[in-house]
Image 1: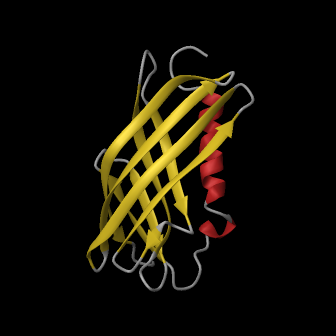
Image 2: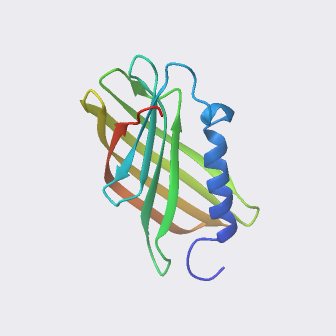
Length: 157
């Protein structure tokens, strides 16, 4: 496999992340409001809230720092309902999921929280950890810690 994360697993993880948003992701339910913006790393951040202002799903792209001789790894983290906490003032969620291509497995864990800083703006932070295993043995851990993000309500066109 060489240096860096396995290409097949990266593609599988991205596809799994998109599927996790569900078939309704492209057509938001009536009353849902989309927010978009960036992380402090300049990567994409998206959030959808319901008509009462409660977060229901989100997606962030982060660059993780990998240990050992492995290259840094870009990961897309998604969250979806039910969240650990989601109110009209803010949200938080801690979750994990696993993926495998038969040779290499990865366990993704995220911790994200955000709060309204204005009527049409949400700020927060996300942390992520990805542990890669081959033959059941951990060989690399990649992390991103407390990456800030800001999203603004997207106006319908």
